[in-house]
Image 1 (cartoon, one colour):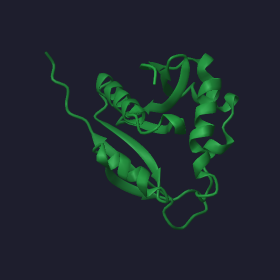
Image 2 (cartoon, one colour):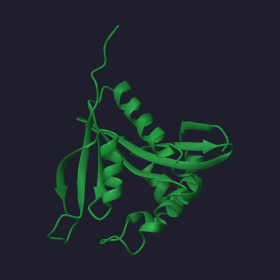
Image 3 (spheres, one colour):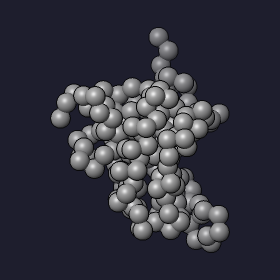
Image 4 (cartoon, rainbow, N blue to C red):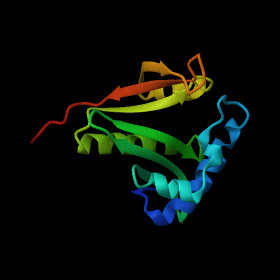
Length: 162
């Protein structure tokens, strides 16, 4: 694999980001109820989302192979849509993207990072828990009585001012 570069995305990356999201979430088609919104992504929707959220892309050579969205709130950074192309998985790209967002959280004085994981995707929850994320609460999508997702959170170390 070419050397990996992480960088903040620009609006010009929307097409590549959309392609990564669609390819990465394809394995969940038919496995999630309600279905993932990633299956309905479009370049226009990604561009629109980029007005409220930042996106980090992982690039191998000149190809975008992964991405993650993050948004700053008053209490935390919310991480969403972590996606790595299937043929580039198990190489630390997802972890590198998450760690990038955690670094941004520290730089922005956000004390924690939160994310949502579907209940049906126990392996994804375990992935985040191995990185130090802990259960905060369960929630249900509109129209569902039982939980369909959980919120996980990681408290970040306090910054030491020099």
